[in-house]
Image (cartoon, rainbow, N blue to C red; front, side):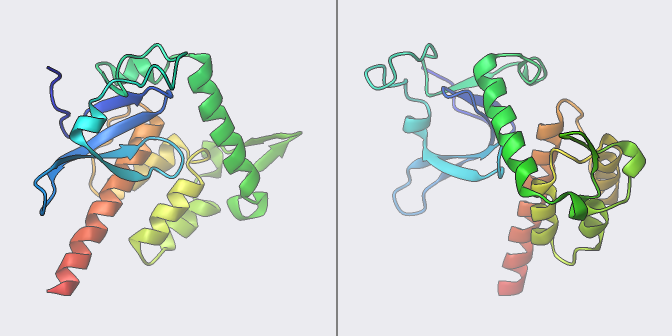
Length: 198
């Protein structure tokens, strides 16, 4: 029998997308166990799925070409996985990156253009979206700015954000570090919402 997911663990979906476990919750009415997990790509969405479904095997009749046995496989070494050059995973990441770059204006981000290539370096520290992030009045706005510019944020800017909030950066993978920040903002928003309802 497979071991239940634990908070902080990483799993790979059979479609080659990475997720991090937030918690294993219990439904208040049915007592059914639910896995709460966060995507490590795109909008970094948070999802809930029944534990038995999360742990189930891939439907081989529907997905005949999939080699992975289970719908979600636990990842032992996330640092190694994040550096793999698997073509199907790289295509997903690259397509998501291109879509996001096309949707953001170069003027608002203070990006440098070299031909068709768009870059953002540490020499641009403190410009464009980063100033907007620092000046944003609420966590939701900060989160949106962070998500919209995740491909452009520099290592120095990430370090600065972590220092501002007194957090320790793992520095295993940039996407994971950004996902950690977004998870922190979500947690703070939930706490603030509960406090205001009292």
